[in-house]
Length: 208
Length: 277
Image (cartoon, rainbow over all chains, first blue to last red; front, side):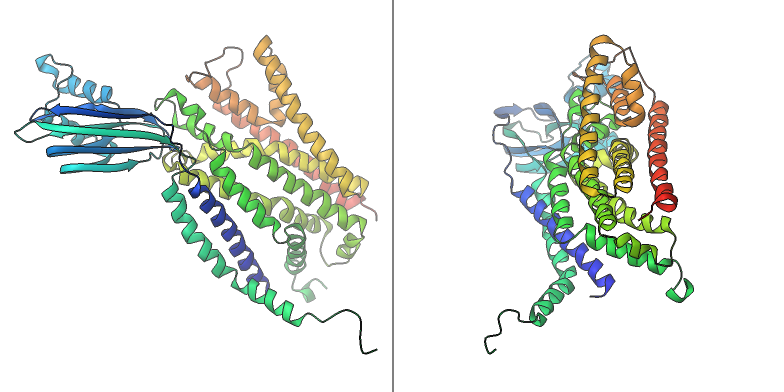
């Protein structure tokens, strides 16, 4: 077999092996023994809350967040702590003496200044379901704001589970690398087949 | 004659291809790639991140990389020692090296072809797969701190490379692979045990002289010390007995690779001038 074809084929078989390893990793279930909570609360019109979910998370953790409401609400998942949010608002707009000022106007000003910290957002929604896996060690805080003129009754549930790796990301890589590796290894398979076909028959000569 | 064979490059490529074929018989490379890919996720940990998001990005990147360099590094050591000891040892025992000496190529290029296959090619999947695995797991940790990730690989690899150099020398001297391989594995584990003892002495008595000396061979010790003294995490409070700087880490790493280079140079000199078959 041509040397370059042999090299390509070995790259292909190695890629297939890596893909199989990734597939195996993606099949490892996440731990179900993580922390979880269910909270029901009312958010007043024109205010927000950042106290329903907040944790330091690593890429080997995954948070499943579910929110339902009877009024349309805005939901943000931000990669800062709630303390940082309140501190920032207090230091910039704390003229009225309130540390926990939960006016939605201030939240919008904060989000406008920290757009890169918003991991996910969904506006004007009645139900929210999101699985969050961070890409670094970070704070994760769920913010629910009610910009409407009527109060919102909100049900929130969250669960943090441990995982070896982000399954979806790893599985996607496996689905690409296995077929690609097999395609690159085709010359090797053909060569193997041809060698088997051409192999001379050995053993006792019965006609002798 | 060299020109008739297409210059120095062609015999070198022939030797390199032959060594590759010998060192990485199917499915050896595939098994190692599989193990590295599994190891990249199974052994990954964020210990240095326990201090929270306030822990420095460099410390988190170091912690993540060093968490991977246990089992995967061991299987890499097994691979390169096997390649150096058995690859070269078998060629010496069976007299294949004599055939290589008849090629229109200098002896040092013969050894280079063998080592490039045995060590150089082995390094590519090791560093490549582990780095890519870490990137998949935590892109915002690895991407901005790729320098620290590569430095951690460098500090952790200098000791295995030193052992590989010693195995090369022993293989050339004894002209046998099996004994050199055993000696290499024993040396590697002996260094591992010595590191443990010296670290315990340093922790209990605050006498860090042994740690400093051993860091010349194993710069991963000084790098670990550097990040542990930097960290304010729950397990790694700052210590006063020895607080190395980042420049110290780089200097020790450079010194360790100088030692590795000297050992390999001795191997080259012996192979080129003294090796009689």
